[in-house]
Length: 196
Image (cartoon, rainbow, N blue to C red; front, side, top):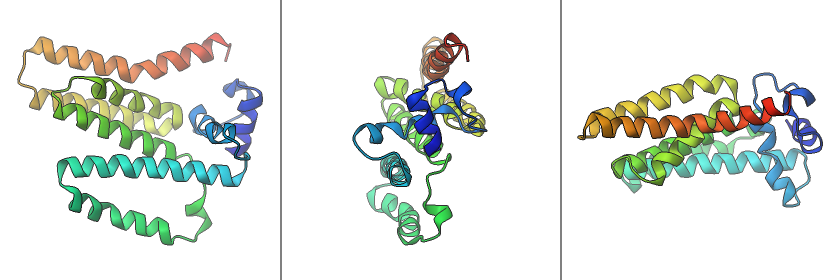
């Protein structure tokens, strides 16, 4: 993926420049921002990016659990994961992998949808909650079913908890659908437009 990041930085047509196998273009592209800030594009940058993604997933998970269970319980629930990573020495655990971005995107998406649920499925969090979920298949092909499942879960949550008319519920479904499909529409138009 480091070689992929170097390749797409110099030749940004992902599908023609490299074979990401089941990893989408976002796993290579996510390595670029830290490199643009001056970090050499090497193992350190990949590990730093991986740690930032893990931190993002943990932060979103902690915020979600704190919202639903309380601060002490949320801390206790995430403590084993923090302790495991903090004491891991096996290189297979420490490397940047194609699973870290989908995990971070799904955690952030679910947290934003939970914030939206607390606000009656209105506002920016409902819209922005769908965008990370829509990015999942572009990070890892196998995350596509997870994106579909999370979208169905969010719609089911609206159906169960929202005590409004069907028209209002349909508006929420439509807004979520647009947010989930927006990354695919944008990225597909870029890649198709460039002949990939």
